[in-house]
Amino acid sequence: MPGHKGLMRRFSSVVIGLGQIGQGYDYDCQDDAYILTHATGFTYHDGYELIAGVDPDKVQCERFEKKFGQPAYTDVQTLLSQHQPEVIAIAVPTSLHYQVFQEVMSCQPRAVLCEKPIATCVGDAKNMLSLAEENHCALVVNYIRRFEPGVLALKRTIQSGDLGEIYKGTVWYSKGLLNNGSHFVDLLRFLLGEVTNIQIIEKGRKWDGKDPEPDVCLRFGQTSVCFLAAREECFSIGEIVLIGTQGMIHYAGGGGVIEVRKTQPDTVYRGYTILNQAKQTIPTASNRYQWHVLEALYHHLTEKTPLNSDGKSATETLAVIEDVFELL
Image 1 (cartoon, rainbow, N blue to C red):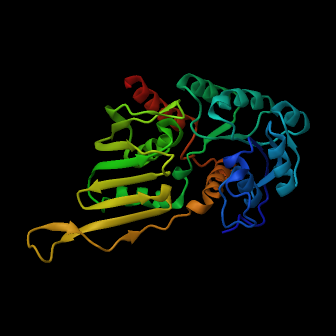
Image 2 (image 1 turned 180 degrees about the vertical axis):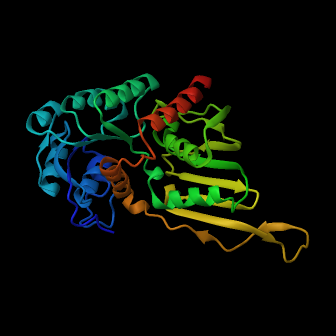
Image 3 (image 1 turned 45 degrees about the horizontal axis):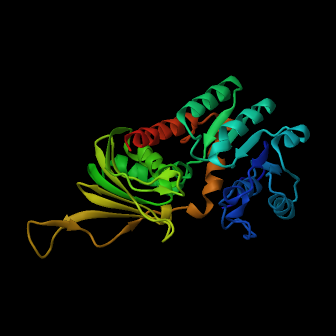
């Protein structure tokens, strides 16, 4: 599905950080079948005009210029001396989010789209919130699942009560609780409610010697969910199973597959209830997730519609992660 045609308003946009999420994941794709990066998202959504990129690696800059036909700079200050972008994507390492955010506030952008997690600590995140408010800048955090149509349909299914009370679940994650696990903490906050209790099951190891990988039970509202850490070097995984009184949800492949199974009477053993073998599949658009993030941001900038993932919600997710780490 291409961007809106004939839009009257386009926002000049830049990408700071030209690694995997900046331009890498879909670099070799020549059409809009996959929109997995900020650069490709700004290219294919008609509400934006990609005007430049930034990365300290000259090779990444050359790759950007070759594919997107726009200049790339090795530092933020040179970019800002040449351009005054309205929308800025920050896709640098997490440890640099706060520093880069402070730098770009000088050009007073309309919006900043910051990669997740928002910062390395809640203190920096709160400072970013204050700076955004002072500069009348929308701060979006790229927890992509909150914008993905399949997740929005799943949320409606849960709220409808079709699956009864969602009372228990499991999450398999890899590559650290902060880096990858936070995606699922954030998603379950969105689907089920705020975290009301934390219980460490096993401290586990640290991914890359830095990011803890605990097995931990979090209660979202009244729903207990066990997060279990897998070994990223064996294979990547991001998977959720939620159990309700009237059915089950399977969120697999990082969100590429969403399946629902409802209960039914057992036709063989009378008096028993089982899960229907037929799976109801909720269509997803995970191959174009970045387009949907930009679509939501466009409506926010032009119509003031609320954002499903903003600086406030992302700071709250980071606070949960910090609370877990304090218990380790």
